[in-house]
Image (tube, rainbow, N blue to C red; front, side, top):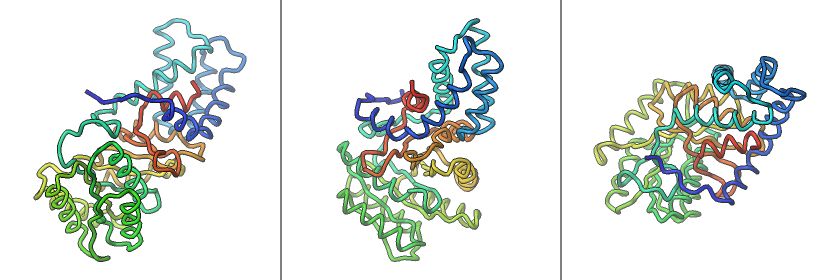
Length: 317
């Protein structure tokens, strides 16, 4: 059974504030689509299609949403524009639910195994290491023992940044010298975590995409080495994407899903951008559930993704 937890007032306020620019953009377009209309007709749907596409939802996902609403209108016979936003929230949330197979939601949810190993992937600059630091903070705050692995050994800055986060959060970071074998770092991290009865392991990895074959080989090697310690590791391969890049995030998702088997998404930098619709499109197109969203710079601003609350905030319902 999925663990949804309670979506408290503080979380809702953070979500609303983080999606404010996206909401203003989407709402103004949808309001224009239904202005002066009493029922949902073809003109409304045409305008909605344009509104969703220009909000970075993506063409294929937009057409799927339009089709669902057409079916709903036929089924319910009469739908007035006053009910339209609620209907839209319902259909988009249901569509996202179809991709949602992850049991763990909030940070205080029970873990299926111990240590629970998350391998974090993504290109440089998307907020990958920062997301790992925030995840570590949230898991520790929830009473879990966390270990970090600095397996992005290609960049010294990545190791240093992860160590800073480790000190800030108060969790151990396993590292080696720059240029060391990333798989060796991952092995040491998982072995140390297991020996010290840790609950969660977060492994940072290199974000280079100039050669997909090398990236694929490196990530496969990291997986194989970790499995010598924890046979079914990693339990989650989390792809971090920068939501503010809109359609570029689709391309990054395409590249990484070809390079490795991604099982969840964390979408960052949604505050300060009007491209929040990209969360819906990416989840739908790649059939990968969104697990976390980044809504600001504070450590508390990384939230577990609650699809219905997200869509409500995006559409101002």
